[in-house]
Length: 179
Ligand SMILES: CC(C)(COP(=O)(O)OP(=O)(O)OC[C@H]1O[C@@H](n2cnc3c(N)ncnc32)[C@H](O)[C@@H]1OP(=O)(O)O)[C@@H](O)C(=O)NCCC(=O)NCCS
Image (cartoon, rainbow, N blue to C red; front, side, top):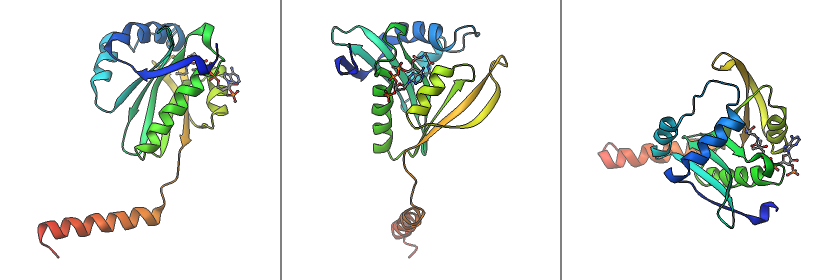
């Protein structure tokens, strides 16, 4: 099996049990549970949240990612691949899809937190171009620290931002008859 045998699709509430199981075993192992089913459901109902499912052609789910899109940033809340499917490009495939979507939405940065003791995931993010920007002491219920990682997708051009702001100001003035 390679990442070419993987299909990506938007997740639904029907995928919650799979997400919950993988979050427990792969992300929150050894920590008090914070991502429980009610929280996952609340999160999925938000309009700016995308649940991405990776599955085999026979429909067996093998990984997922949960990302929240904000104005400038997108926050990758959860990401996991089934242990026996790791190291085959599935994590990369999901991140690349999410980053492409983020770029389309003019989001300039993807941010995530990773357990400081999770060396494999830190190496994974680094390989995908993420920079470790901050150490967050006791981030996981005061028990384990996290490293914030971020990937800048593009730098907004300040000149373009100024031009755009002026355009909006003029447009609003015209609308309200203030010109
Ligand atoms: C972290 C995780 C999502 C990565 O997914 P994956 O499918 O195993 O990773 P991929 O096979 O797509 O790897 C992508 C790249 O990262 C590199 N990489 C992955 N794991 C690595 C490791 N342990 N050490 C060094 N590099 C690693 C790969 O070599 C690959 O590089 P390449 O594409 O240039 O060859 C997965 O291992 C996982 O679910 N871990 C447990 C949960 C977790 O830690 N989640 C992240 C924090 S919330």
